[in-house]
Length: 86
Image 1 (cartoon, rainbow, N blue to C red):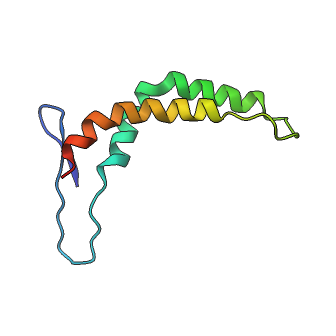
Image 2 (cartoon, one colour):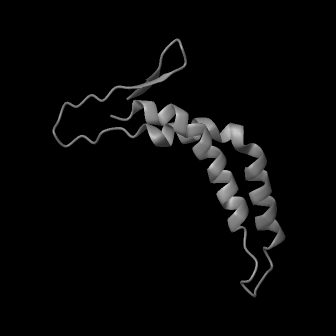
């Protein structure tokens, strides 16, 4: 279970009643919390997708915009995630 304390820092609490329980990965939660900060790259990626929708040649792509979006999310997540790693 992941909770936020009063200081808005994320703390991970892993509780396991059974040996087969999987630990919780905070990265997915942090990515979701960073997505609102990366709206501009997301909109650019979505605009690119619409722009090339009818391309049958396969030469057009939105790889740059895709990586710009995930780079923004990674830059937001990294300072919050790495201090929590052991």
